[in-house]
Length: 366
Ligand SMILES: *Cc1c(COP(=O)(O)O)cnc(C)c1O
Image 1 (cartoon, rainbow, N blue to C red):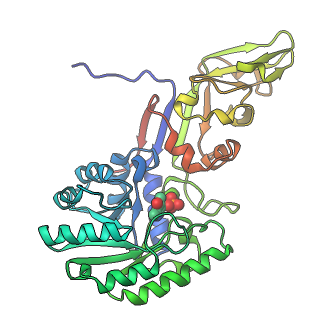
Image 2 (cartoon, rainbow, N blue to C red):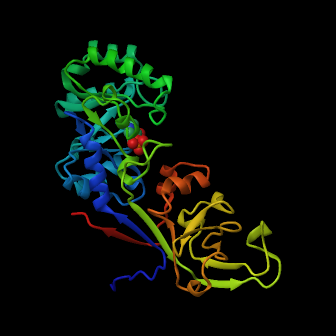
Image 3 (cartoon, rainbow, N blue to C red):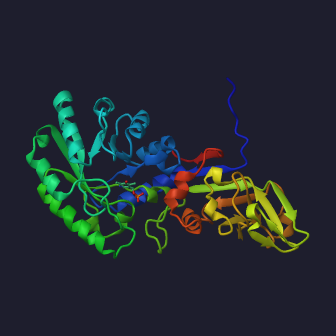
């Protein structure tokens, strides 16, 4: 079969060296403790294969995903490293965890019991015990965790770590942080033989009391600012560039795009770029995002179509406006956090929605 060549005019460039550097920046904050990596959802949309290999090369030994299927896929990329599954072990999944040597995060009494029975059948197993300290999403409360201790589970399960998840880590003075910290500290006394994992990306930028034994950063590895409102300490990872498909000079006052939502004055210069909401360029960016063209931030005008956007190049020197001119939609000059803000969402959603239609280029890595 012939190789399929991409003719895409839009390129998603993922800088693997920047991911490795970001890992090092985060790991350096763990004075003594270890830094894992969260690569769920195809490494936040960037490609788990390339990203996981890069992180392994940067020294990461513990990887987190959300689901069993993500973990089985990751096992083919990382034969030896520890792989943890946030959603835990579901009914009928036990043998796959054992076969692929995956470690479940046990979130409930049901999951603990299930893993205890599996350990009876397959031999001693490891797990992370998830204790809820205020997120109220996954995990057991402190009382249930105490009951696990006095059950038969610890005879067959090694609780390698206990973990909890911060709900407001990106808001350093949020009172919930302290409350969660004091609860995980109490839980730690109950499980003296287990390590503790609390911090996500933003948690690594709270004081050292929040760091414990194992961090679980995700977004910061991929260049999202873990300290919103302050200078981004991470390197930019993602660049999304495209090429102008058509340009036009508006010869009479008119509107552009579906719904005629944006007025254009006579003399305006409009360029059409082949990226749309089917590519993950969110529809809510219509009439509010900016892109970078000829070194300037220029506005997206009109609604986002499925496969196209229109931008206003009236302020760009006439001589550079032409078919094929490069436009940066996300990148160092247009950070993913800025795009997210314009869409009234967060960088995580922008990255995980990035589509499959453009060419993907990986820079650096191992
Ligand atoms: C997704 C996730 C993380 C990573 O969070 P970031 O904010 O991306 O660093 C850590 N822990 C848990 C339980 C998660 O679900």
